[in-house]
Length: 137
View: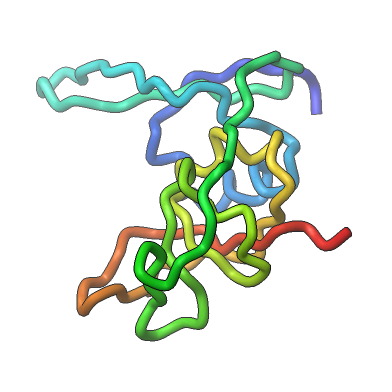
């Protein structure tokens, strides 16, 4: 793939064609500050940047530790729920994170196992999540 810089809709993080490129680090979602624009019908569209170019950016510093109270488990899948910035550094098993994890993924020692859209937490179905796990050394 040639080097590229693409501005696309934030929903592209969910596209089945884009997901493998992000997962395999062929392209990166390079900004977590969403650009907003409006179409001809005055509907807001959130846009983000994707790129193959090497871009230096701040890394996410993970400092939280696992506690069953702070990290509840899904009722229909064996994993815990976490925000991307709150991933517990000492949890060895599966963790569900929002799809926006792709903004930080290239710099973190985690692997993406799968993408799930059917997870339930406290009786509520969640938006799509990535299931990650700390890389085995």
